[in-house]
Length: 446
View 1 (tube, helix red, strand yellow):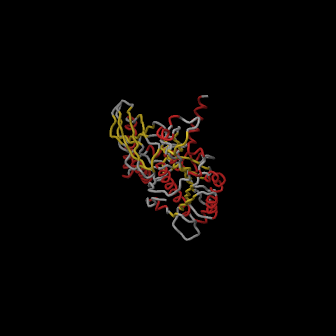
View 2 (tube, helix red, strand yellow; view 1 turned 30 degrees about the horizontal axis):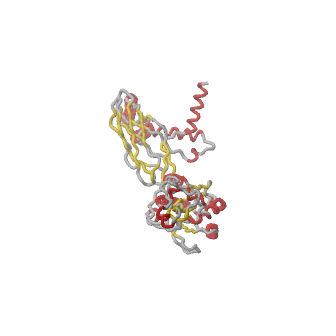
View 3 (cartoon, helix red, strand yellow; view 1 turned 60 degrees about the vertical axis):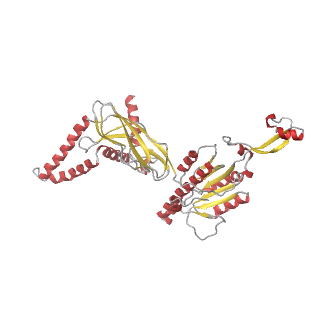
């Protein structure tokens, strides 16, 4: 039974693949995984984990020189080959003696901003009775979407039982959910040809929020007269009621609201009347559609890249709108459709601004028309809000008809098309914003 459990653990680990490198997409898929492809991936991962870059250069040179030296054993090339291989043997022997055994504690943020370096801190503890030499942490190439923005944390020596703090900086150029492999400490002592590594801890996931430049102004009506009655009760932190006027005292009124001066002048009790403060609501509808991949064969790969750039720009603009709304008296209803429909409500004390950025970080291009899913679910809800801001990736009859239906239901709409301004039949008030303008922070008001 122990052997069977051991076999199952090894099998699961083998098919999971080495997690310290980025596996190709055909290996990462959830369906059938080729054992041959996984075996090659394991050999490659172990090779780059054990052999350093100088060691790889020397090892490849030794392979070529060994073929040439097979002609004659007295060939000087053969002597050079034996000398280089002896360096590898010496590195293996002394490296095994001084191999590190470290406890690694890594502190890494859960949320970061795209394009901005963020600090990663390490605390290393030497668990051996021998010093650990030439230590570096997370020095291998990071997984897709992450890169080093500073040299990896390194230390010349860690004494037995001692602690040391190291620091490095990572950066992610684009938004999304990123994974950092479990922290790995490596030692290239003594000759730097081989690496002796130890791992501690678990992988870490990071949400990369879209980069945005804050808006200065946003011209949208609050839409309070369209609100449902319960909306004004959504947020009470920091709220107050407005003074509306005075009226005669009625049975059941709170005595503390009696206005004594007016009561004395009139000769009967008069109470102050208050009106509950209302909260303005705005619906933010984000387009996520890109043509199916089969159409890219006709349109070209440049069109696929264009839609990806437009989506990133749209998410940046949506983040700027969310940030502006969080500082104003707005409740923002975010609608984004793809494979799933997202409806998230934020603003004031309803939820934190970071929660909305979490949603925007994970939205991907939709290969199906999102407005087919969005119309029945959103039209009635947006009609009860009264104001809508649409961020579109393209313009066609379906989107034009959707805007017309919103306006027929009394919704004030404003649309932003993430593209260069072109000639065409566009609704009044259409705003054109290219991805370059949004990325450079030239769109400061809507």
